[in-house]
Image 1 (cartoon, rainbow, N blue to C red):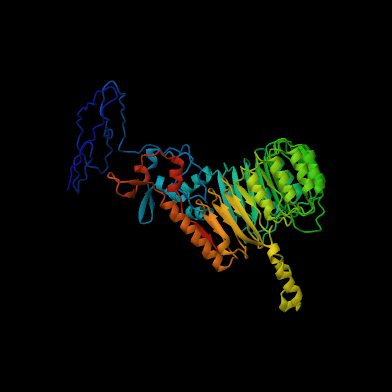
Image 2: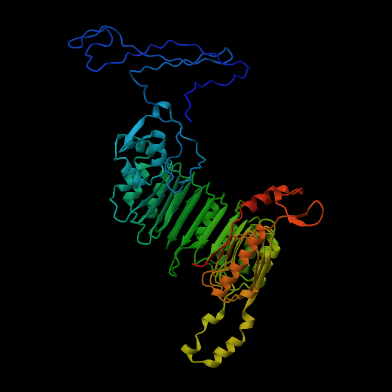
Length: 588
């Protein structure tokens, strides 16, 4: 069916009056016949003629409205388009990892004059479409797009200038000036994330400092083949020169040797792969989060006691502290507790085999408001867990005790029973099967020793029974000494059972209706099949949770959907039921 074009009539004004229209006599242009060589203004022949009459223009006026609305008149000339205007209020341009159309940044405002068409090969695209397409390209693709044509080059240039965040991967054989040429295109860059597959030297570091004067967040990660050659003096100058720098995260810091960091704006500092530091001076009064990850080498000569003591005196606002080192000891814990960091909320002291239950006592006496406590790799026992439960029952929500060989299933169950706010617990490699430490009978030939050990396995294998209303993530990876597991956790969404080789399928009960992922890599096939059967049954039971009602005559009970039920129900529960997904059992 074909409809003729109808004139658009604006709706009634708020005052109740309707808009009135004024008829306009618009002169029609006379059709120009082919072969007409006369002037279109005065009619004289064009050859050798200079017309003295002004050019004619066509003027259009919007319909005049009643006095209740302000009438607007727009006059445009057909001889020349209006001048091009610049973009205003551009959104964050370069966010290469997020290609979702939903964005919290303000939308791009483009004037009507920007909606001209760019020629793009066999088709044409408006500027707005070109912008949305090019802003999703990675840096290499955007550089290539700028070489296609003038329109693409102009759009790419504006994208680079509007960029606030850049995530760049530097290939192994890149030219020395590659990073500098890219960064110079982004004068307003405030967040930089570099993934280096080539070495990081002082030249590249100076190029970053010179090209981006307003950097606020810097993250530098290195691949296995790349080497970070930055020294402590270069790092100190970089931090001191960046007056706006608030977050610095850098990997591969094995060549620092020592450093002095002075900054009044720095609030987050992550340094990994530290090794043999002669001095560490922090003069950062606003530092709130620090992560120092040292190498695992035994010959590391870093003085952690002096480092922790200076850190507590010069950074009084610290809230999150993470230190990973095999040289962590009880003396270092005492130095940290003596600093009296009143705002400390998260404490992570990892791989300190000399950290014992006495260290837990010192921590609990100095910091009673911890929300996260990570003592993985320490030598604490079930007694230390008891002290943690007595001090932090109203604040602690995350407890990580992986690689603690002195912890048993009794301590794990006690922690989950005494910490009502617990949401995450990691107990990996705590309940281990000692049979792996003994050689087999074929290798040793000692058959009597092997038989005696097998007779005592029933004393080694343990079971874990956990009932918790708020626990969301539980990790029991590597607990090969675990043979029975009973969980009643309605909020649990992630369960890690990797390498739990001795779990029996008939001794595993998972009453976790919200479970989304179960990691079962390294488990035998019968256990994997049993877990899959249980989680599939739980999901089917959730799908069938509808109230039952009798018919009007009371003869038969039928299942009624929730929205037809007369009983009130919780909107949050309904939303979670709609968003529920089947649980995935991850084997690889």
